[in-house]
Length: 474
Ligand code: TRP
Ligand code: ZN
Image (cartoon, rainbow, N blue to C red; front, side, top):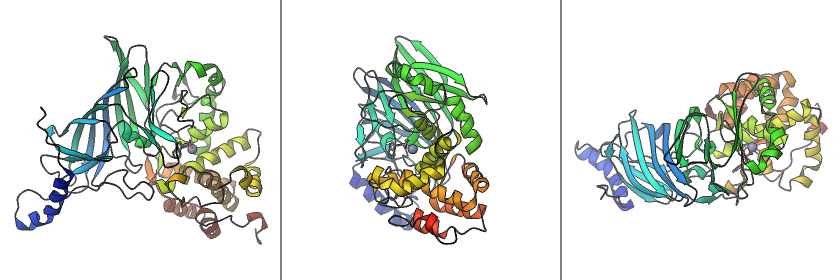
């Protein structure tokens, strides 16, 4: 019998309501307040939690695809941002068995995706603490507001974990919001014969008693939505980029032939990207290719993007560009999604321009003239303000987002624009940033230019902006 007494939600409410009076009544040791149950993200209000920052995730997990059973312990190192009597983690589904804070048994309760932990002793502001959650069960597949599937996605021979925007709470408890990035160590045990691939670098692998344990280390800060775990039978290859970066690819054998040629271009795409976006922010690169019909989309999982089948070159360029724009410079909230997708889409345009395809100007002109025939929602909302959680991956965020960047290029010229691309990636390397910081950054790089029309009409304005080519004085 665990000593843990799960707290009823009402008891926690009482605890927080009592805090203020406890403070004035006496010095009985209750001096904090509970951390918030969300970060007020404009699109995903319950994602993330207030009152603390996670600095490190240590995930020690075992999974068997045969019975779809996941079990293990997540140990988070975090820093209290206020005096805390309780704090929340996001976890959807699964059974929690035990929670400790700094080794002491903690009380906890669950309501929806919120796991509320009440440590034995209050945590002082500034204090670094470790919370360990032991849990098990069959993780859920989560359906996004836009109807796509994420979270835990079983494959023919294993599973794939994809986390944009909310899926990571299906397989580990955490502060699941892009504004709280952390380093990771993932130790994963699977039946012998299967591989387990994640972010970062493989630092250890051993097989004993019919099970293989792999440890993946991610030193650079990572947002939990780009954390991944792929378990299955993979064709694994290692290579190096021209600058000596390790390339690790894991490919579903059924996609190996179709993938070979395009994945062999990773070193070339990386070299071009480093030239165009600046120094690569991580310690390794690569790709994961697995047949996953429910996903059906690629994702910029950190270090090695995921592809649901052999990608084309444009998609490879897009996902590798995200490593700079999205994974390294991460949106502060889901409203800033165009800082990911506008940049990654513009990377495709630039790649085309520099590899014998259409110029970015031609792509822009074509979209301006005929965009609504290809994307029926292209002008339906501005990139800087998506119309709802179901629309953060719609074409106004991607294509019109890229058009914002092209309007900036038209205004500042190629040389300054190249500096904006590199400088923006450098200014917020390994951090988070929002749209206001981006517009301020652009203005600072080109103080003599006027960006009002770009911000007002292209970034934040409703409807189709006036034809820039037709404007007087341009
Ligand atoms: N970010 C992915 C890409 O462009 C696409 C994507 C997958 C996505 N899942 C999502 C976008 C969920 C928004 C929400 O490469
Ligand atoms: Zn993208």
